[in-house]
Amino acid sequence: MAWIVLLVSAVLEAVWATALGASEGFTRPVESIVFVVGCILSMIGLERAARSIPIATAYAVWVGIGAALTVTWAIVTGAEAFSWWTVLFVAGIVGSVIGLKITAPKGGPEAGA
Image 1 (cartoon, helix red, strand yellow):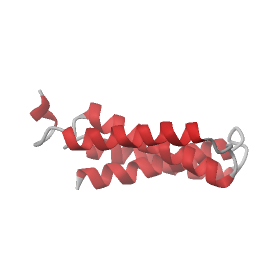
Image 2 (cartoon, helix red, strand yellow):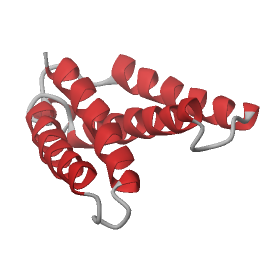
Image 3 (cartoon, rainbow, N blue to C red):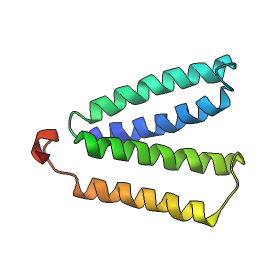
Image 4 (cartoon, rainbow, N blue to C red):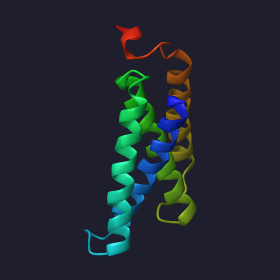
């Protein structure tokens, strides 16, 4: 369950990061509100997931998935130009996240100590 919470939290990270860019310096109210709500919910999700997943692993997965989704969304919407290099490196991030999931210690944060 913690991994699902972490994944949802990472998606929310991509939402708030995208909203931050669209807020134009917090001058656009809707985008600014989406940023604040998304950021709060994303942080709560990260904190909840880190109760069962070591924080180093949880944070790396949260950032990695959030970044990969943010870049993907930017390319899909045309905010960023498509590049095979970008695809390659985003795939590397996703592969690293999968590796972290596969190798994560079982039994909670204290299991890795």
